[in-house]
Image 1 (tube, rainbow, N blue to C red):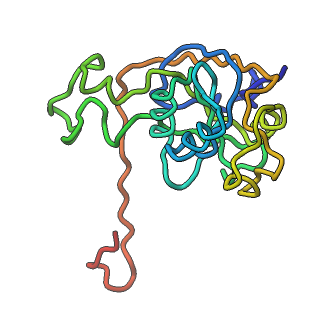
Image 2 (spheres, rainbow, N blue to C red; image 1 turned 180 degrees about the horizontal axis):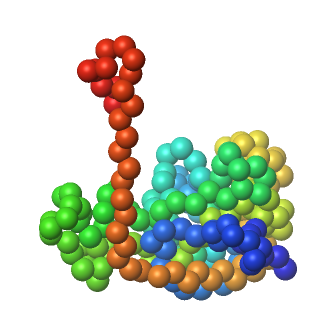
Image 3 (cartoon, rainbow, N blue to C red; image 1 turned 180 degrees about the vertical axis):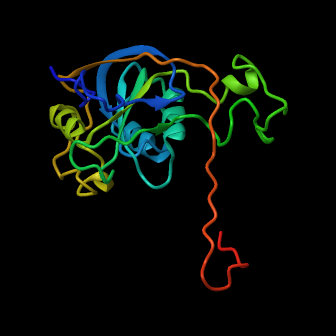
Length: 211
């Protein structure tokens, strides 16, 4: 048994979370889905592995954002998602936080500027809620991800996944002995944020701007 958080309870560091993940719990066996792309699920299906009713473990790649990883896992029947980064810049125990909202911008003003006095939808509007995932997700450190990966049984990872990044030639995809019990408790509320814009005047050609 180990703590997925990697952050002590008395630490001033914000505990790991994904913005816009729904509150909830997921308990199940783990399946490793590589980068969580459609082709990765097709590769798993070809060796008889399903993620339905499981918690999936994905390593963040270059092609999909977190929101897309969770969206695909949700469509495949997963109960929850754990995402880790092999190159997060924070070291072996670093955790990459971020959003799992689908799309960009202010969720309550989809497609138009979120300015003072502008139109804003309610948080329960269908145009807003459809951009949020329905299953919980959490970021994971590489250290904890490798503990989980080492516990997996089942079929060997597809050939194209092996020796890629830190995935070794003998890697299994699961399910395995380990059962993950993940819980996320968030708070959905409106908050005002401020953008800071600074101009630094140059000593030469001060009337020119570099953006």
